[in-house]
Length: 375
Image 1 (cartoon, helix red, strand yellow):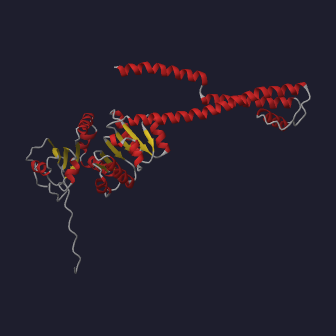
Image 2: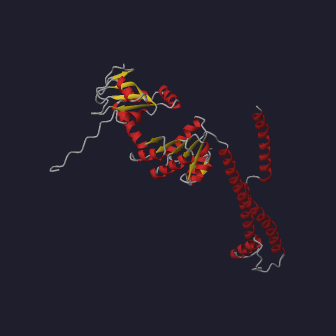
């Protein structure tokens, strides 16, 4: 409560100071625009006045410029009448005053921008230093953007590390904590508070960079939960060896999702399009569980086995909640004695269910290469 009261007392003071600064200095950009407009008007009136006194356009422009900028090379036409002296005095007074104001506005614009940038970076660094059990996102591309949006919606604290100028500006405009750095550099990971982080998600489009970041992150924080993105199927094993706890293959997941929609339309609709199931999936994720559909491939060990046998072979890593027969029949809440058939779509729930089930349980064993004639 005391912290809340301090914040409530501080906010009006901060608003008052900001209002005072705006009243005293005004908007730097607005002052700069006003100064430029004022000088253009003064110079235009000076040129017109000299021309009305009989000067040529070139002489008038030259005289106004050297007067306003206080160069003073000399008079192109003798100023020997009261009218010319009056025009020149007005240009000196108004023009020099305008130039002083314009110079001040330009300095204000540049200085305040730099100050705001320095203090903004310092404030962001202070906020990052205070974070504990947060998430670090390496990369703010398509996947990083969606991941950040989901984490903010779940009120999870996170820091983004991004190298691209445009992406950094976009992330900061959205109000995210974003370090402008290369995530492959250990200094950037340390600045993001990796020693106190709970999870790191490296979602760069480069598999090599993701492997390198995973290696660095694992060495800096052995207890860190690392989720890595991979583009190629062959990269998955490399990321696991580098220290990743989980590997996500977006292309592979997309293909599986499309296959689900084609082969098991009702199940796909039930799992992914129902609002209740979306909420249920979030609950499962919160518990560290997944729900997936996997196909019993022809020739796989699952063919002909009962659900009870498959769950036992899985070592308790998953349990089967639904079977989609190849003919189109759906068995929800199947009995333990239900036999899995060739081409069935099996809905699994568990911790790392797909990875555990795919490791030789539902996939067909590779066929031995045929012997070459004469060998």
